[in-house]
Amino acid sequence: MEAYAVVETGGKQYRVQVGDELKVELLDAEPGKQVTLQSVLAVSDGKELKIGTPVVKGAKVIADVVEHLRGPKVVAFFKRRRKGSQRKVGHRQELTALKIASIA
Image 1 (cartoon, rainbow, N blue to C red):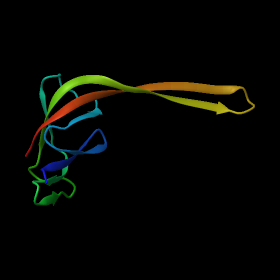
Image 2: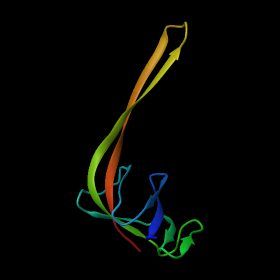
Image 3: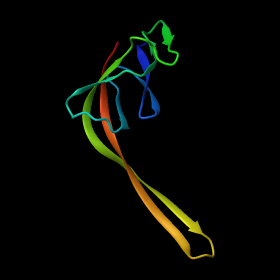
Image 4: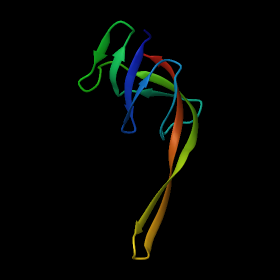
C-alpha cells in the first residue's frame, strides 16, 4: 500500500498520493510555484495510519501549481408557478490545478 494523506483546503477534504492531480478552490499562488498544504487531517506511510485531532502535527503536503482554470457552469433556475416570476443565476467556480509532489 502506498503512502497517502487526507488534506483540507477550501473547506473540502481530499485523499491524495504523490503524483495525483486535483482541482481545488482558487489558491493565491502563481502557476509553476509550489504550495504547502499544512492542514493534514490524516497521513499514512503505507503501514501505519496517523489521524490528527484535528490535524497531524508536523505533517505537510507539498504540491506544484499547474494552472488556474474555471470549473463548469452551474445554472440555478427559480420559478414560482402561475405567478410569472422566474430567475436564472449562473456561476463558474475559479479553480487551481495541483500536482502532489511530496508528503512529509
